[in-house]
Amino acid sequence: MKSLFGHAVAMAQPSLAVKENLPAKPKGKTIVIGAGKASAQMARAFERAWDGPISGLVVTRYGYAEACECIEIVEAAHPVPDEAGYLAARRIMEQVSGLGRDDLVVALISGGGSSLLPAPAAGMSLADEQAINQALLASGAPISVMNLVRNQFSTIKGGRLAIQAAPATVATLVVSDVPGDDPAVVASGPTLAQSGDRALARKYVDLYKLKLPAAAAHLLAGEDNLAPRSDDPRFANNSVRTIASAALSLSTAAALVRQRGIEAAILSDSIEGEARDVAQVHAAMAREVSMRNQPFAKPVVLLSGGETTVTLRGKGRGGRNGEFLLALAIGLDGTSGITALAADTDGIDGSEDNAGAFVDGTSANRMRAVGIDPLAALANNDAYSAFAAIGDLLITGPTGTNVNDFRAIIIR
Image (tube, rainbow, N blue to C red; front, side, top):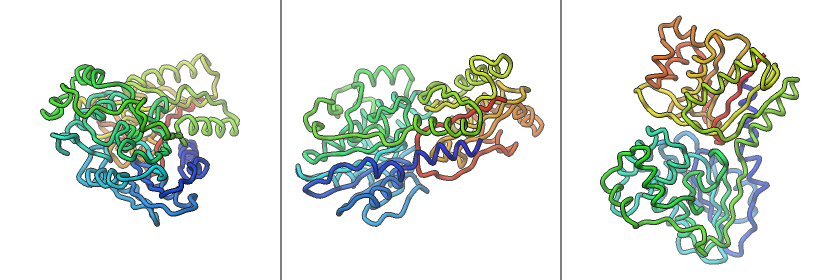
């Protein structure tokens, strides 16, 4: 199981993809900027592949930095932004200001960039943007909704960075962590026009009952700080390429499984929804295969990716993969011949130190044996404590990439 995860992560490494997706060299200077959990690794790969002078600034999560010679790497907080990210966002906007038509801006964008580039709109503070992020993280809203809402209050997201860089050409390289791989959603699309408008953002705020700071609510009610439209002529000469994604990682994992003589089925690379609900569906499918050999004949490995969400109900510890696995452990309680892993490909599930965990039909009973009620733990969003107690956490440390969740269920 762990080797499958490692293989999927290895195939999503920026070092493999950046060199094959270099933009054309400009007549003028080249500025490299970026944000996300994989952005430092992307910057290092770009430096090694680029034949010519470069400079720039990239911001990544604390603990994710890589040594670069020409590109400055700054670390900041994720998933809730901090002062370091705020200052980095300002410096990035300064780096792309005053450029000419012969200049090139290379934007290295990966998941996590939304919180790493806090740039509150006029009348708002960093504390306001932090409060918005916290409300979104607790809401259970999908990433596309979260980023549309975030974009309303930012001076860098939703294509605003590219507008700042105009008339320079902007070439964006994306390591996608979002279901469907829409590059404008990754890191809230600082160089790409967003889908959706202010009216839709208002509907989402109401739908998910988001409590906004007063300054943010005032801005949302009006028409100030609107994001640029996709038909803005300042986007005309720009380009975007998705260089790594969950789809590629899952397909390579499936190929490895088949090389080992077991069939593999990719359910989807873009599954969304409440983690515990997604787990119930996966558990039901795994039991169906185990008992009836349908819709797939065993032995088989069921693979899936995407980004589930967690609506916070308790005060426990854990991320969306842990929540998925705890619900899966309950759904598979007492079954035999089924083993599962779920993990975040960046190596960090939520804000804990684990990438994910392992589950089989004995997991729930082993939790009870050490005094943990799995149902109570799930109600308290405390998957981390439950899996730590039985020694089934998967801890990898930062992996250098981020193509979202990886799930594998082996049925023998």
